[in-house]
Length: 411
Ligand SMILES: [Fe+2]
Image (tube, rainbow, N blue to C red; front, side):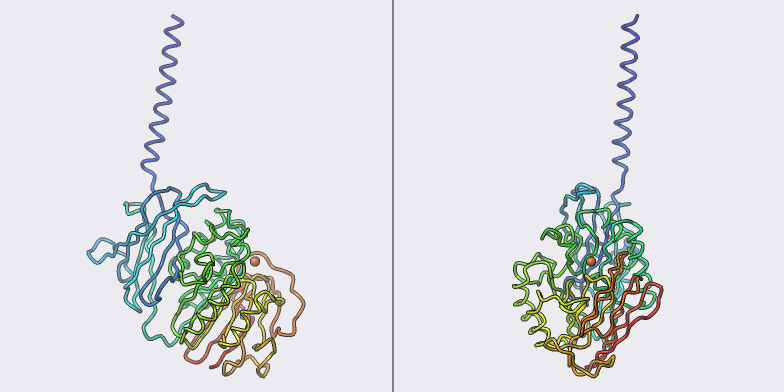
């Protein structure tokens, strides 16, 4: 009798376990794999191409990009373009392995709006459709946003980053791309921070290309793998640099060079010189993290400064200091110009640190001879850089919309 009872109980327990296991399997099968951390970049010609990166929590699923002309976002006609990109995986400390998806599209039409979505190719596994517009063939005027050191840890930190970009695009609604001067998150091994970095600014980072610079936090311990896995960037950089940490690209009349102050600096000097010698664009802009003339000088990049002087670079965008600074126009380490807010005839290079787009403010450093503007306002900041023919206008704002600096470079 007792044995019979035990057999019944055992049977019941096995049945319950079976139901649970089958239920879990059924739930797993029904689970959709939504793309996250989607970001658009410029990898090739900004008139005809765009590049994309996204992550998934599931590994080994396809990377599919679909595009269609116009802003309606209907992906069921014969005009839908479909591109299969590459899938890899990365081990992250906080989230285990993540699927890394990269795809690019080329042969787009200039000055044209496209709707796009990314996913595994299966129904219900697509990102929300959004739009972007390619660069015009003949472009007289454009604006881009410049920010630095979003460098957050928590969700609240990245809410500040999201708010900064919201205000930046409210102030410069036609901005065509973003340059970020480095230190995107505090710890690149913390994948949750990346989720928030992209998540709190999805609206902008999926529709306007983000061109990042590698900061000391991004390349912690001399390795930038968890940072660079998140971006699909030009591979035209310096020999032996970590791919994607040094590159240059063109937009309209501007040539923009991104340097990496964290590694392989000597070889970048040669590459920088060649890169600037090769361009015929009238506006030359450089972005780097630990710049030569920020809150204080950084002598480690003095070889690069000689090249900026030689090729008459207009503007150097810097990060790292978490305060606002703008130099007088400089040549060979000396102030040039008339001390006004207008730089004429490529007489000097202006070096800026646009404070921070994150939560961390540093105490204002001692004023240096080259500082034309230098302050700590303890509010997140952004700048709009507008190029219109022979005139570049740089305007810096805080997160609540107050304009705190403005200068003009006149060719
Ligand atoms: Fe920083």
